[in-house]
Image (cartoon, rainbow, N blue to C red; front, side, top):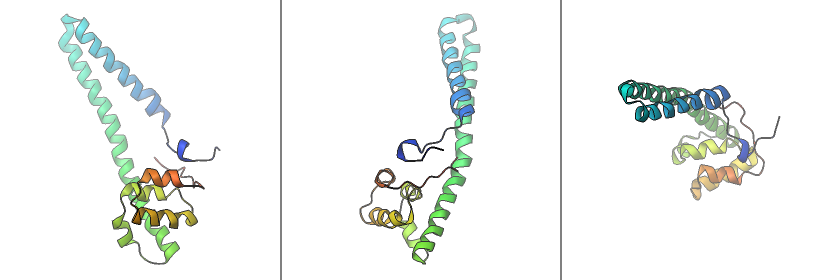
Length: 145
């Protein structure tokens, strides 16, 4: 399996991202086209377009909302556990000072870089993206949703 890094760490679900969503987009474009070119059935095509848009919106929101909410909670718990293992103290105060994007980015670091980048996140307020760009030895996360 290919080594994970900043450029390839995003994950796609092919049936959703490359079949279902593009199909909905094509149907929406077709429906909008028919609204302007089929005056006898204009109301039908407007309703068709509204239904397709709602399916598209529902597909995006439902899939993302539940999975990402749970994933975010797990990432925070992972950070707290890891912080405790490294420093042998609770992370409550530290975690409150960090934004979620910073906590999420730190999961891609090994312990030696974790300390350095955590310090920078706390004292220089670097973004999650900057943390990811600063990682020299990327720790892959292959279980993301």
